[in-house]
Amino acid sequence: MGQKVNPTAFRLGPQYTWKSRWYATGKRYADLVSKDTQLRANLLKKLTKAGISDVEIERSLKSITIRLFVSRPGVVIGRGGSGIEELRKYIYQLLDINPDDPQATKVDIPIEEIKKSDLNAHLVSQRIIDQLIKRIPHRRVVHKSMDAVMAAGAKGVKIILSGRIAGAEISRREKYFLGSIPQQTIRADIDYAEMPALTRSGYIGVKVYIYKGESQLK
Image (cartoon, rainbow, N blue to C red; front, side):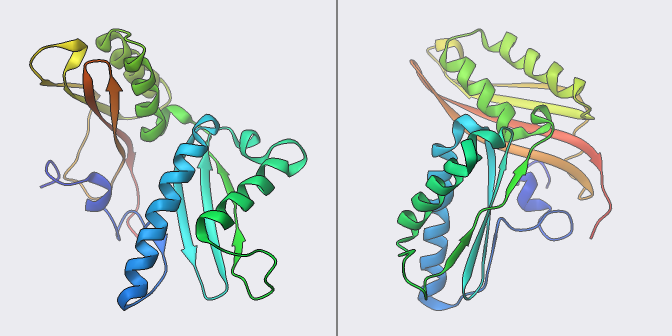
């Protein structure tokens, strides 16, 4: 079963928590899901240079907490906090909130630094994509990435490429792995990311699994 489902979704509850945390019913539920999806996609695109990997959103009656996980927090904060204020205005615009309204929803933007970027599946996959787009040989890219992940302290790593790899006429799927990836073990802490790389020959799908070890279930 662990082979067929998203590793993060498979462990929601006992191992991981949800990336959006709030309660709503009816039409408001659908509206908030749509807003969270658009907000997360825009922030991931805007803050790519800051090494953003994830966005968590918590909503209450009067406030919204948008927690950003980045490898270079200085890029987000900016000189004297100018960057964070610009980002706040951008979020107000995305959420259609008037900051001058005293009754407006407050937006809090805590920033969490990623200490080891080589143990973050999103950042590893982003680096692989950037190199594939530059037409660097895929085997060299993958093996170099796996070596960096294992050197950072991972117990195992698996990378899957699928599509017109190296500009081939017929699409194919290639798997590469080091160490162990116990995908059917719920207590296994597996960071997972999947992203597409748009090369000159077409899209190449990139999936990255990083096994960090076992953790205590909640």
